Length: 370
Image 1 (cartoon, rainbow, N blue to C red):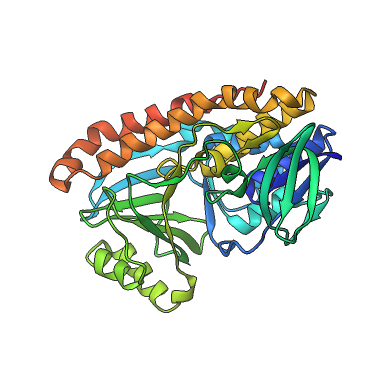
Image 2 (cartoon, rainbow, N blue to C red):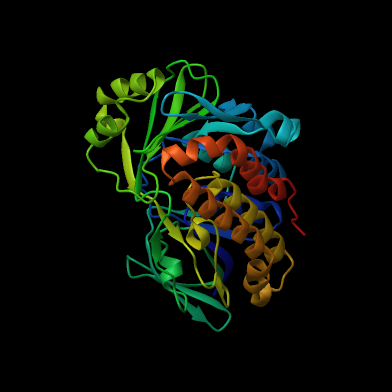
C-alpha cells in the first residue's frame, strides 16, 4: 500500500493542501479530473484568505497578483450609496483584501510544487481499507493510500463515498449566477448594485479589467440565456449598462452556473476527509470559498504531520466546524436580508449593513492553526 496522502482535486483547496503537506515532509499525490472551464475568471480574497495564503508561504507572490480591494460600496438600483466599508482599516495592512485572476492564483499555488500529479485521473469511488483507503479510478485501476482527502468541490465523488453523504441544496440568495470578466467601466472599488431583480457586483482586477458577478435575490431564478442579464439589469446605473454592452459582444466569456451549497453532516470517516467546497460550499456572499479552503488545508496538514492519521479526520472536523458554521449562518442571514423588498431593504441597509459586515468578518481576522 502507498502510505502517501492522496488529494483528489487540484483546485485551490487541493493545491494548498498538497503544498502544506509537502512543506511538512508528508508524502502527497494529487489526482485531478480536469476541465473546470473557469480558469479565466477571478477570485475575491477577503482578509482571512490573505492571512491563510501568507501562512502557506505564498504571500510575497500573492502581492504581485491582481489589485488590492481597499473599499466596498453597497449601492441601490438608482446608484445611491447605501453604505461603504473601509477594508484597509478593517483588515489592516498585513491582510489587505485582493481580487486576483483564478488562473494566476492556481499557478502561484502550483509553482514549484514537485509532487506526483495524476491528470486527467477521475476518481470513481473511495472505500475504507484496513490501514487507509482504497481508491477506484474511472480507468478501473484500484490503489490503496494511507489517507485520502476530497478536495473535489461541490460535486465531490469522495463525499458521495462517505456514510450519510449530503446532497447539495440551492442557496437562499439565488438559484444561479452569471460570472464574467469585462473592461473596467470606471469602477474604483468593490461595488454592488442591488434592486428588485437582482444584484450586480463589479470588482477591479487591475486598472483595465473587472470581475463581474450577477445573481438574483431571495432565491429567485436566473435564466441560463444571456438575455436574462439584459432584461434584469438594463435599467441599472451606467457602469452596469457599459459592462452589459461589453459582454454582449462576447457571450462565450459568460459563465452561468447554479449556486449550490453543501451542509454535510460529517466531513470525515476513518482515513477519508473532505475539505473546502466538498465539505461546506456556501453562497459567495462573504467570498469565503477560497479562504476557508486554504484554512482547511493548513489545519489538516498540521494534523496529518502530527502522525495520528486515524484521529486526524475527526480532529480536523472538530476544529473547523464552528468557524464554518459561523460563515454559513452569516451567509443565510445576509441572503435573507438581501431578499427583502427594496422599499424596506434600502432604508435598512445604512443601519444594518456595516454591523452585518463586522459581524461576519470580525471573528475571521484571527486564525488558529494549532
